[in-house]
Length: 463
Image 1 (spheres, rainbow, N blue to C red):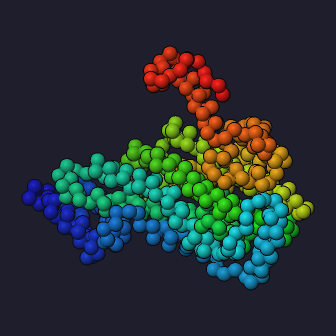
Image 2: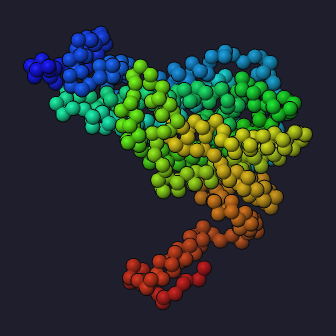
Image 3: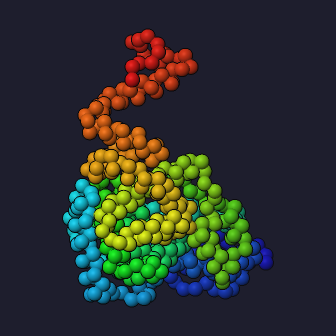
């Protein structure tokens, strides 16, 4: 091919414009011309199909188009039917009514303003998809940016100008691919979860308690426990979870912000992406889909992410531990209560549905590894000071038990008992004591200039 026959930047730009505007397919002869520039025609055709699909919406929004996620998730969720029998709704309405009465004896946290409800898998997808999108957005953006960078690095120099303005398009292609995989994971998740709080994070709006009768039978199939007892136990757990997040309005944002902070630190392994692209077969994209869904493109966690994950695990364990204790007290009348509670704990310990979903998409395991220790802490607090004082720890973020409290419940119990006797120091006194301790440690090197001109004698202040 001579230089005169070689397609120029304008030719490539025109082909992009025609494809993205939906004006028809690519001329095979045109693809053969581009093959002279070391561009595989089959690869180019596949890219164009993806671009045309991703850019069907010509609006100016550069964000991720999540419509593919919703479509894919609902397709999987609704494949076995859309409805719930009247008998199942009645069964769970009765279970929720009795569970609410029992919870009134086990916790000081008030009832929900809206009645609990049984929902379908599709309704669960519709209700929770906005939260999944929020959690996955940082990683979706990272994959989109990495795709753009990989394409730019492998684009011939003579074509750089032709694709210079296509950055937004390429990012949307990566976002669309990620959204499709997110929808597949959420769809499969909808076949497993039994309640709104089953995943362990606040997916449902505050104050909403829900159960999925379509998945209830699968959960209890091998437990050999009567269905009415199982329904009561699960209804009680779901109500406890929903009540907690409605009472502690700050808690929802606290959990989600910790997850998104972790996700923002995720960066795509560009070496793995480029290595995969080098052998990518457009006619069989299964390997690329599997890499995205399995998390193979996500590198090892950084030290900061490990620390963030530890904090999140402690937070989730603190929440689930409280739910465990309150549910156990409320369902103490059920003969199979202990067996059901153990089944729930085992399900979470081996990696419940939420962990699998988030681990594959953002490299994050939502496993409350310290669940038993946190439950033991809440049990010690309940036995020592009662449900009302225990539940008051959720009134404000600063009062919530810390990881140190999980390690040493006796110290937390002692503080709560001192507060009950009126012996707890005021907030200002506590802050002053802490500041004195920090000042003592920071001044141990002998540099006291930062203390200001009115410093008194050296040495620790009274605590």
